[in-house]
Length: 72
Image 1 (spheres, helix red, strand yellow):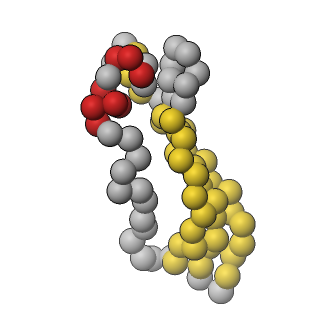
Image 2 (image 1 turned 135 degrees about the vertical axis):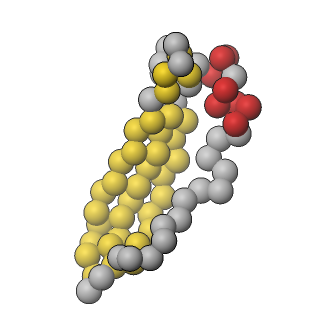
């Protein structure tokens, strides 16, 4: 079975609302390894206090999946 999905991953700026979000569509095959982005955000930017992704040792990551179609 295959599943066609639209998916996104967001890292939340906890102070100013300047979030980092990537969205894509893909067909996933059941029981096969998944895939992702080789570069979502540079680690130095993620850790940089100016971007406010980490506040008080907390980071908010929001995944979202929308199933577009199921294919047998």
